[in-house]
Length: 274
Image (tube, rainbow, N blue to C red; front, side, top):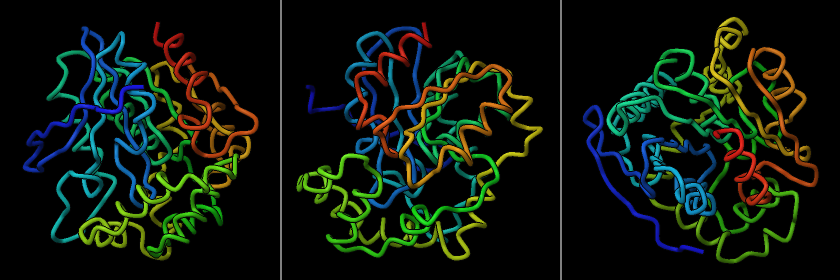
């Protein structure tokens, strides 16, 4: 497995934006990560960038406030800010429409991009996605309310995964914990998801009508055992509303489909894109 993934920086709307880029070819895939503590494009996508980049040009940006991308001094993180930044990023790296792959919160941002700028999107792929009105789960409350410690991170990894052995992966626990402990990351994360956290989840949601108007083909993935974003409150509703959508459900899988089901996940994406 390739362990080095190219890091680059680009100025997007005055924001110094960190991203990974691999592969070549006319068709481009943009990977949009989720919102957990210590998350980054690399943490979310390190396993799937190499296989996807064999046939496509793959970009994975750190969203504003996450990873190595600039943090805001005023800590005013909004869905509108994130969506505008992503739209400008897509325009900067591609002259043509792209394939969007969005994980969790990144799924909601993908839906917003597809709703606002359908000209930029060929197809969307969503995993354990939010973006529809639903009551916040106890799992998501714990993720967004995380207070940094090694033990708390271990508990969160148990929550994210179906296979509880993932929490014994010291490298993974330490990688995410150390990333979450950086003072700039800690500050921005605390500012993004204050209580009442239901409000931030509601801000990420589109209306039913907006979702029904998204005409691009959509492939949804969800782990049946997802305790962060419950499938019955999210993907089952999205599949009813998105006019050109299909849903793939993995049993024995939590919130991290790209990590727990890497190979079938990549195969399904490549089939859907082709």
